[in-house]
Amino acid sequence: MSNTTSKISDQKARQEQFLRLLMPVRNQLFRFAVALMRDHDDAMDLTAETILIALEGYDERKPDSGFKSYLFTIATRLCRRITMRRRWFLPLQPELSESIAGNETPPDVAADVGALRTALGQLPARQREAITLFELAGLSLQEVQQVQGGSLSGVKSRIVRGRRRLAELLGATTQELTNNQQSGIVATSSLLPSMQPSRTHE
Image (cartoon, rainbow, N blue to C red; front, side):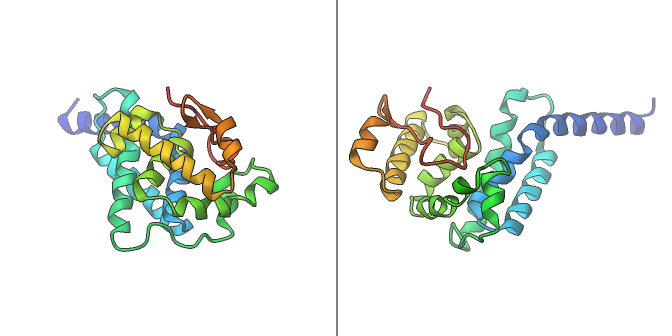
């Protein structure tokens, strides 16, 4: 087999392995992009550019377990670059509610998505990013740490403060906050209906 043929074969195998890892998280990546960009076309662009950059830098020799944090780190950095020139969240387009919430979301829940996004938009950028990565993208605490940098305790703190602030913005009462606490963590199943099932810190 010639060197050229061998390189083509290796490249094809690398692309196939990349696609195998990408497909299970592709929808999560797009929903993450929509939540950050607040615009369908911008989210599509961010997703496409993230995938291209990820493919270019993909090292098939690295463990598969690190792929998700690798992908979302690229998306997060791209978004930060874009938002240096614009506000973090643009006004939510009504037609985006369905795409954010997912086709399986009941209409009454989907109707609350706009209020949730407005509340998210009032969080500090790092808290908003941590909440979105953990709740919407479904990353673990360790993966969020890899994306954001810093310490694991810092990630936990941002999620705790972000959840509490969301609860306040969405009108949860003090008693509700108390009842929903788990080891100091406010449960968000009622606050983030359009996102992945809420999880406590492990």
